[in-house]
Amino acid sequence: MAFLKSLFVGFFSVAVILAAIAFIPGIPPDATFEQYSIVPARELPKNLALNEKLNNVEILFQGQVKGPEAFASYDGELYTSAQGGYVLRITNNELVPVVKFGQDCDGLWQESKCGRPLGLKFDKKGILYVNDAYYGIFKVDVKTGKYEQLVDSKDPIEGKRPMLINSLDIASNGDVYWSDSCSNFHLEDGIYCMIANPSGRLIRYNAANKKNQVLVHDLGFANGVALSEDESFVIVSETSTSRITKYNLKGSNAGKSEIFVEGLPGMPDNIHSDTKNGYLISFAAYADSQNPILPQFLIPYPNLRRLAARLLMLLEAPFKCLQSYYPNYFTEQFIHFVGGFESIIFIVPNVVVVARMNKNGEIIDAAYGTNRKMSGITSAYIHDGFLWLGSDHAEFLGRVPLQQVFPDLIAPKLQNYNANTKESKTDSPPKPMPTQKSDSATSSSKVKKSKSAKADTKNPQ
Image (tube, rainbow, N blue to C red; front, side, top):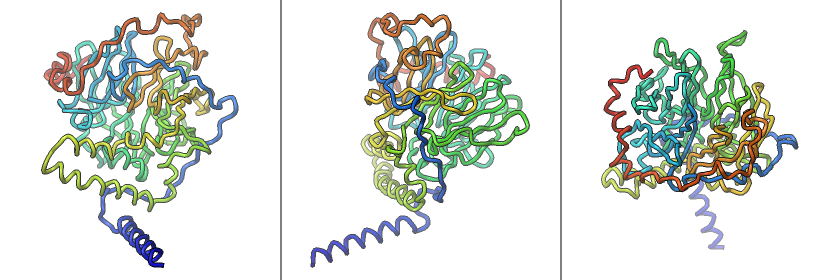
């Protein structure tokens, strides 16, 4: 009897403490937690069911790169963005640093200092546009490493600073359509952004007057951005709500947004062209009726979401206090881990998926990986007969012959490509990238030059 009484008192005490944490006003984080709903993952038709097309992904540059998030290519060369703040060119079996916008830093846990380039896109003149989550939007001359800043993350846009600058696409007139994933938290605290109510934005940078305009508010972690081929509309993926929103630029509905597709089989990330007037959608996490995603499962329960966010904040609080008085490597890493997405990798289902979608928002093909060889795909990009795969936490680049995944997307000159050829594989081990510490101390001369030349590059074209 005494044991049951003690158990009840303990349970009651914990319940009171949790209720206090959940409902007492003023406890961080400062974000909105209200009830909303999403369409759950819909079952795909049998012809789009699970397969093993991505199981034989080729691993490149193992341990030499961290978090290759997105891809872009120009003049036959492929580029990617990575943790540590660098944009890298993949050439001659090497990862060559092209540019870095952030400061020198001691390690990846100092992400806000290092900088974190995410979205990449070339314009028709070969100028690379880069979105750095912490610093802003830049355009880069990849031949010299010189760059010009278009958008500064310190400048508010319609009353709010862009907190997590993510993906982009470029119109033929030079306008930049880009996503601000969250209005409350930086990337290093991305978990809170997923738990709180949607606050992402789709924004247009007007190249003529150099001003930004918010096109759509309250998106669920606004992520990948892509213009239609005729530039009549732009779409943006909403990672936390498993849908894609469309904003009309031309026609009778110009200036209005609508749902392009919802109930997707997971959390959509970057969007790239499939080269056939459609899109390749990469999914950071897979979902179906048997494999729900925990943050989405909590969406109908705002009090539980608020409680979870506050508990995480309280967990971080003593370490932040210690860090302010006694800065050290261990507490800094712990703080970065708690708020970052890598802390929830273990709850992501084992399946990965890349879907092909037509211009009407219909999924017409899908490739899956079921052997955990690669997880959390954030980018799927076609280049030189391969589908290149990136992930924001992987320590390698992945690729698979296009013939094996989406054979009807192969360019005519590659129709006779042999899926088993070894000639296209790396003939010699890729040269290693320097570690993060050596990056800080011995950055390439191109990167150093780009910083010093910033004031002289107002028109890199």
